[in-house]
Length: 136
Image (cartoon, rainbow, N blue to C red):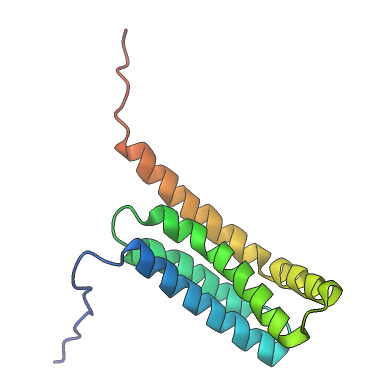
């Protein structure tokens, strides 16, 4: 009879800086790989974006939910701009079209992840607020 050991996270979790760096690196890597292989952003980057939203919220310390909800869209936009500039050179019309196409391709994943992240953040914020007395 074999038993499986679950990997337990030691300590309280990632700090805000750790969440930002981890999410940014994962999103930049997947965006660069997908733009290099397919010349467009698609399902691979979208799934990585959703994983980053979930992972940032799940593995961050208490108080890092806001950072985990805000970072993935900014990291994706920044990495899409940088990778597009590296591939196309500085041609504003071409870079603009490619960046808009990348943002449009990842939009459903960004929206779903942002809805989840903001729901968790606002729900936690509402739970911290003291309840109002009912009868006056």
